[in-house]
Image (tube, rainbow, N blue to C red; front, side, top):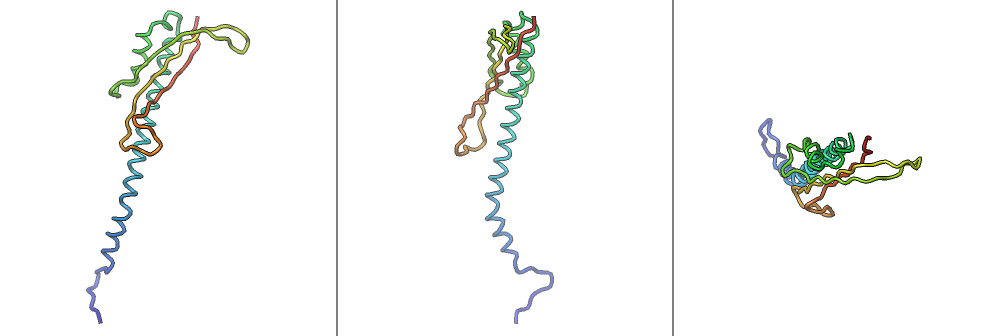
Length: 138
């Protein structure tokens, strides 16, 4: 008959083995969540950059052609990104639903993002681009 000491678990090695089997999957899930959060945060920042640049450019006709002013307004939201996004702007005219012509400014913010891990099916580096188009006020 086996004599066991009270309070000792005879399955101590089983828990360590289970942890060794499950730990790689948990680490992979953690890295995926961190990568997704990073992409989401940077895409949100890129969206804000394009929006703020278009908003500044649409305030008056003189602003719509001031590319340095648009870039300054757009990059104000990206102070924590290094390198900073690339900002480009274009102007044009279009027709609305009532066949009334209007001028617009379109601002595009582009950022090249590198994931922590090369995920299958997701390009690395990942180009995040957002374009916002607003009507220029007279």
